[in-house]
Length: 141
Image (cartoon, rainbow, N blue to C red; front, side, top):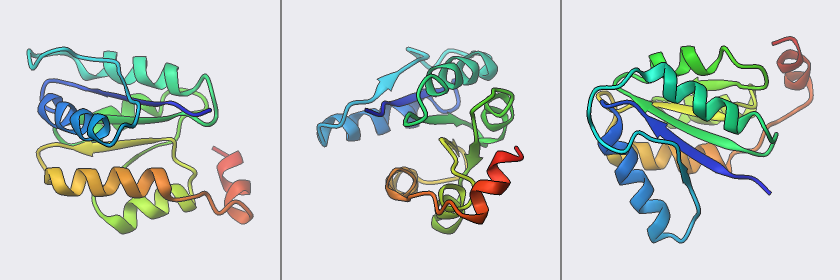
């Protein structure tokens, strides 16, 4: 059974809380790995914490949010078994899953709307990996 984890830095805190409320409203379980407030924090701490949790099971997914999505992405991709993708459109989101089998979506709270964040997350979780020739490439990562 898969688990969905979420974490942010201070810049992504408000969007993280908004996303959590939407998951709860839809009766979907999500595991919040912090932070608990919008005080300044160092994003790598939270990216590493979430990446470790996601990497424990190949069916797990993660949502990381910072100002641009880039810092969280860089830190998350330092971990084995992690394929984090910064998503900024429906197409980039679908391709991250279909071709790269991404297991963490990173979002830039300063770059996308709340509505798009929810749309990208929903797309990310519903899109299946194509496998085939893409699996060969993912194996080389």
